[in-house]
Length: 292
Image 1: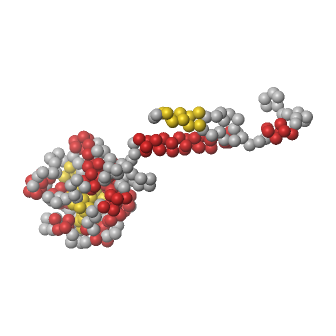
Image 2 (image 1 turned 135 degrees about the vertical axis):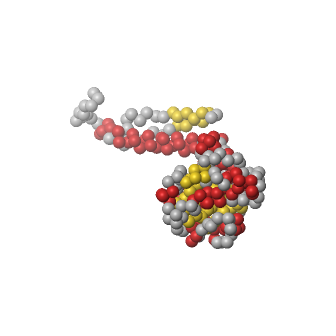
């Protein structure tokens, strides 16, 4: 029969039945050889045009699931806290690390140990830290992941957990703007990002409050605070910050965000600059509190 012509009246019923039978979607044959994944597909040129889209969608979905399974087999996602493989349904942290993170509960206490650090030093509206910092523990590993190993997703995830805690407290219910502790431009360029920006992003997703990323600027490239005494830390940062366009935050309740609070020198320096703006209230939150 010529392509495109109709069958003659004398055509047998069996031929007609075969010609109108619904085509069956071809099934991919998969062969895994070492790290190679090859597909041997049956031709689908005889499928109606409307079925091509569904066939391709099926194949792409199948390929994605297969490749994800292979990647997880050879390169499993690891917990940011304990470095063990994550189980199905777990994200960033395993269930064990989530339950073992040392929460402080400070957000529910007005006069908590973090707030006491700043008593008599700077008039804050509220202050808290979400976890206790312990060396060689999951919380230190988590912070090192996003601070030194480019795991931005870990910082955003922990920011969401911070936001969940802050929402439980009336002290933070009227926050208008979230402000990250800034890095100097040189240090930010070397690292590629500011970890406090990422924590703020996670907090904002939960609290639905805008982040003012570029309003507070570090104008002096200060040295690391890690091994300095409390007086040395204060001298290192007391004149290091300035506010750009202060009129934009006049009269607002501001939330300063940092990863770790120890002596509070950096947060104090930032708060002092912000409190020079008329009718401003300043609160602060750190992911973790470390003992000096």
